[in-house]
Amino acid sequence: MSTFVSLGPRVQKGVAAPTNAPQNWQVIFDPATINCTMPYFEVSHISVMGAQGSSFTIYIDAQEWENVQNGYINSWDPVVPIPLHPGQYLYMYWSNPDTDGNPPTVTIWMRYDQDIIANRRTLTTGGTP
Image: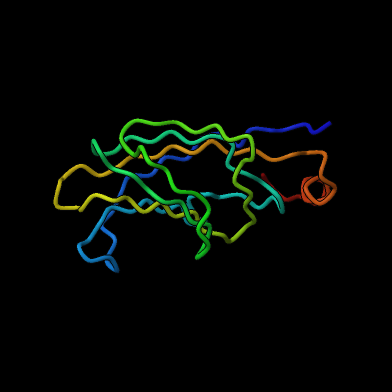
């Protein structure tokens, strides 16, 4: 049985995605924002607020993970959480243009399993969650 330890929330607001035409909103959780050195951790819950009628796509680095039809007010508590490792990025690309003046806001909740041996070793060698 796993024993999960919460790493708490991280909140990011949308920025214009310079590579999209037209420029759509994107939310970026970079390694500095994620701020976790555990070898194995995960996003266990997501809460989003965006423009009415919007949708978004989630990527881990350059790999698509999920398409979400409702990007307006939504929460996601997946049976299979999003697995991450230190140094990875989590991107969310919205369908609506940044010219609408309504940037999305995303809160992710993270956790790690203290029963994973690599995570336990990180804690015993002075690493931080």
